[in-house]
Length: 65
Image (cartoon, rainbow, N blue to C red; front, side, top):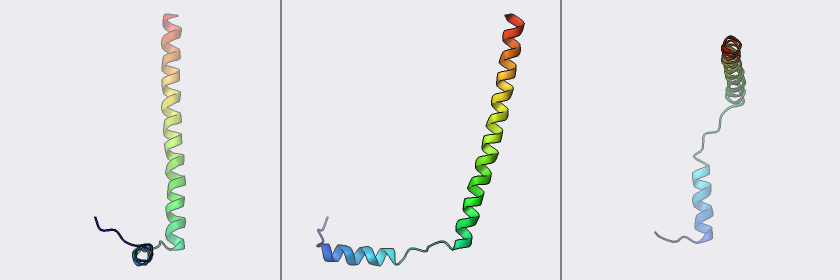
């Protein structure tokens, strides 16, 4: 692997950073909203599953207890 000096490294790094396509403000807000919405849906789903398991186990323990 060829070694590069610090000046070449900085030049190559700047060249690569200039190729990055940054998201627009609208895209950032849209994806952030989707993350919050899907997190809420996942939290609701797992809360309901937990409630079902808890009630089921409580019924089983009450029946056999």
